[in-house]
Image (cartoon, rainbow, N blue to C red; front, side, top):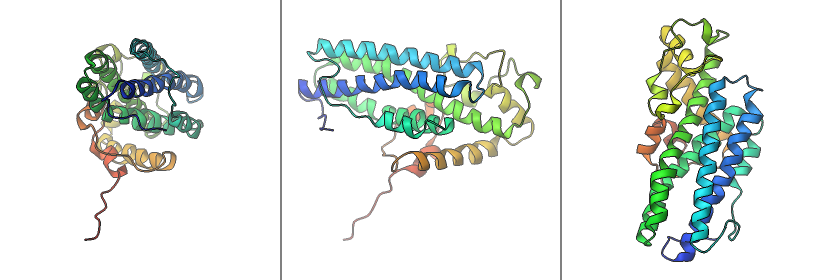
Amino acid sequence: MPKLGKGGSLQSRQAILHSLVHTESWAIDLSWDIIARFGRQESMPREFFSDFVRVAQDEGRHFTLLAARLQEMGSFYGAFSAHDGLWDSAIETSQNLLARLAVEHCVHEARGLDVLPTIITRFRKGGDEHTADLLETVVYPEEITHCAAGIKWFRYLILRSLGGHQSATSLPGCAGFQSLSVVEKLPKQQQGGHEDGQSIECLERSLRSLEIVGSVECDAVIQTFHSTVRKYFRGPLKPPFNEQARTAAGFGPEWYEPLAVKDVKMPK
């Protein structure tokens, strides 16, 4: 892939925006793929389907808005070379829902959160307030919720495996229970539960009653995340990390810093 530049020229800004449009194109396909490929196979609850339908709708809107903006800038989608890293990862994780959630939705999506503030600044410095505003007010905040969906359902699978065979409907008080650790970072319209399936809120209530939810979060969930990323993602994660956005999405430094590039001191 040729370098995109830093947004100082029109061609550089076109190339950067083209890269974002391409990423949104893959994201649309991947949002529907995770539903069709894993939803029924893994007996996921209705809320899983609803979350990723919303993600797909967001990604489709992002694609439409950014592609239209690219045309306004005198270019079009397909005018530049584009990477296929997201699809390579999709193929690698096509048989494993945990891996798909970890790599696509908690590594690649989170990487987008890391780089978008810099991209927005470069467009502003290049005098393109229109594109900068579009990225800052529409794309960036919604990408945080997409990453949150990945974290939410990754945790769900681990909690479900530890929760045994109990159905959510058999747990007292599940219908109105909201887990702040998972749900509070999501938009209000994404906080409602569904009447069928095993919701993550109910599973956490069950585990909390056994006083193991803390160890579940620190040990089972995060350690599984580390081992999954190391197995299915090529190479270490690249800092700097957008800690504020990642925290808003529901995961702190203990999730990703152990997977990061380590500073190597050069000999004097």
